[in-house]
Image (cartoon, rainbow over all chains, first blue to last red; front, side, top):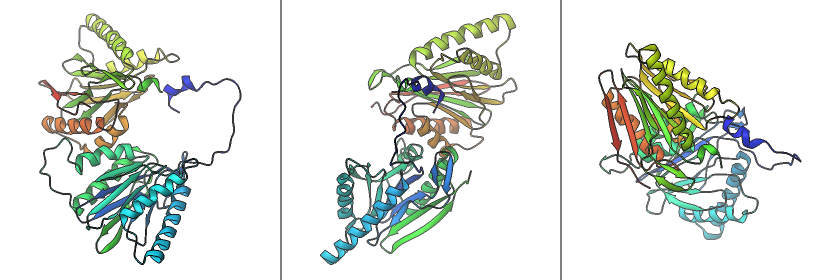
Length: 229
Length: 204
């Protein structure tokens, strides 16, 4: 608690020691949608308070339809959500005889999240993949399913550090660069620099970043080591 | 609703090669209501030392007046300009004097020492000094500024490049904070001159 909050923290009377079903495991995730690729990345540190639970607890999950979900917030909820999504993907394939498109999966994730509107999944999700035209697509969510398709997004404890950098480098905001679509090479460079920066200043981000590169040829995973302090 | 987020606003200071820069936004508001697009939160001590104050607007104004008085008295008594490290200590003591009923303001100080060495520092609201080697940030968009500075800053930037770097850091960071923005001002201080520029940015 910061010094400026100490004055407001004084509370008289009964003290509550209720069990909280939620915890914050920290970490940063990001996604960038390109013309013919999609990059989804998340760091692998799992924390609780000032402790590190694990240096390698991935929070980005690959699915059988080529989509990748990056979660942040509570790891247990993110992991369980990914399990349920994969189950629904399997049912869909059996019932419809084809793999679920990323757009359909995006809508489905929204309804799955809203179904727990009164006991939410404590996750800040970013779903990435290729749309039906082969273009990169990312969808961002709040914990209860509000979603929108975007070109780039950062989430998690380091989200506020990374998002303006993505606005500047991917969205060319406050720049007069020619409006060429972002290349995979540039996106990877920006993502890695973003994680390095976040790892410097955010205590919950570090150890390693896993970058999922989605193209028409499949999903390729790259590991990028980060500071371990 | 934290008192430090009542009026909004932010500052960033950076070190360059034989130069320093300080930038602030210009918004003053009361929670969601924006009131002014030219609120001054950066002040000059002399032509080699500038500082800024983020946080509660009334404390920004009161502290700047207190520092103006203290520095004027220093100049009269000492018959010399105050050094950056000395001014930083002055600011720190003034804030710690109110340890149990603080001013809700967090300063950023940038300047050139007597031998033209760049100096920057920042403090919390009770005067703990952070002597940084690279950049300092404060205000409601401090996290966004940290992210931008960490990615864009590199050592030994020339004044023109330092200006571009600090400007991009400020403009992109405040666009992700509802309580900051509505214009921006940058001062670049070199041994020979101070160049002040007003940035064109989003006014929403």
